[in-house]
Amino acid sequence: RLVDWRSLAVSGNHQHTVSATTERIDMREHVIDFGRQHVITKDTVLVDVDALVYFQISDPELAVFKIQNLPDAVELLTQTTLRQIIARMTLDDTFSNRDAINHQLKEATALDAERWGVTIKHVEILNIFPPRAIQGAMEQQIKEERERRSTVLLADGHREAAITKSQGTRAKIVLTAEGTKTAAIQKAKGNADAKLQLANAEAESIKAIRRAIRQQGGRVRATDYLVTLQYLGALEKLCSGSSASKVVLVPARTLDEVADVARVATANAARVAGGGTGATSTTT
Image 1 (cartoon, rainbow, N blue to C red):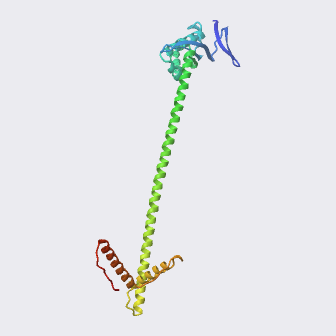
Image 2 (cartoon, rainbow, N blue to C red):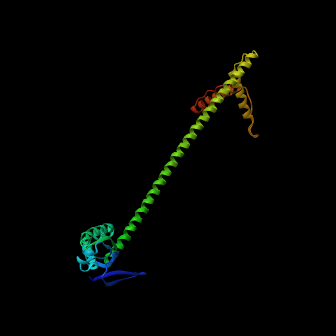
C-alpha cells in the first residue's frame, strides 16, 4: 500500500517540510513542527503557541491500516489537545507552567496515538506569543515591578544603615560612659590611696618625733613641736614675698594692747557723735 509521508528537513537554520509517497514505513523517531496556533486562554486572551511533537511508529500495520494520513492525524490531534489545555489556563499560567502543559499534552495525546500504532515520545512548547498590546502591558508591569523592588531594596539598605549607625552610636556612648566611670573610680582610688599614704607618713613622722623627744628627756609634746614647725613655715612664706612688701614682727602682747586702744578710741568717737561732754583717758 502506498503511504503519503511527510517529514521535516533541516538545513542549517532553515526548515522545510518534505512530502513523499512510499511503500515503506520509517520506524525512526519523527518530529512535527506545526507552526503557530491561535489559542484562546481562560481569561479570553488570543495567543499564538508554537510547539513540537516527537513520535515514533511502534506498529507499522496499525499505522497503515488504522489511519489514512498519519502525520496529519498526529498534528491535528496535538493541536486540538493543546487548545483544550490552554483554554483551561490563564495567560500568566501559560507562561509559568510550560512543563505542566508539556506533560498534560503528552499524556492526552498518547492514548489516542496508541490506536494508530504510534508512541508519543515528547511534546515541547517552543514559544508563546501574546498580542502586542498585552506584551507591552506585561513589559511595563515587569518594569514597574523591578522599580518597586529596587525602591524596596534601597529603602531596606537605608534602614539597615540607619540601624547600624544608631547601634554604633549607642555602643560608643556606652563605652565612653564606661571609660569615664572607670577613670573616675581609678582617680578616686588613687586620691584615697595617696591620702592614706600621706596620713600614714605623717603618723610615722609623729611617732618618730615622739621617740626622739623621749630619748632626749624633753618634756615637749610632739604636737607642739609640729605646730611650731608649721608656724615657722608660715613665717617663712610671709617673709619670702615681693621686695616691695615689708614684714614687721611684734610680740603678741603688743597686738593685744593696740586692740584695747582701738576699742577706747571707737567708744570716744561714739560719745562725741552722741553729744556727750565727758572725756575719757586711758593709761597704757
